[in-house]
Image (cartoon, rainbow, N blue to C red; front, side):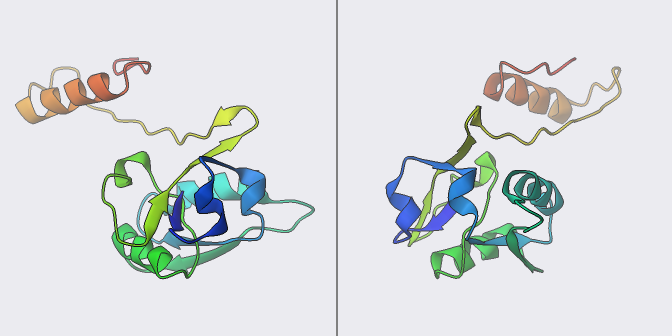
Length: 135
């Protein structure tokens, strides 16, 4: 979760989905926006009240800039956390069962010997050892 540094939730190490029920969540129309929306709706829809989501036709980086200006909060992928902006902080979002995840899948031909693909698969296996790269 990307938050303005002065946001009340920024003082917490972990944020629970229920903490976000009254927040404006900013999302990019670029990938993986639709997957994040599904995650938000599944965790935050209560009594037919859907989460307050604002879509922006800008890059994910620009959405983080909007968050740093205090215009809302945003769910971000773990890969986006390394790029920090002034006035922005990141926190993990969890349910009572633990951290939330969005799964991604990659497909390639088994006989593809492209060195870039081989290195990419090696990086995936190093970064996510608990998942099956070849499963």
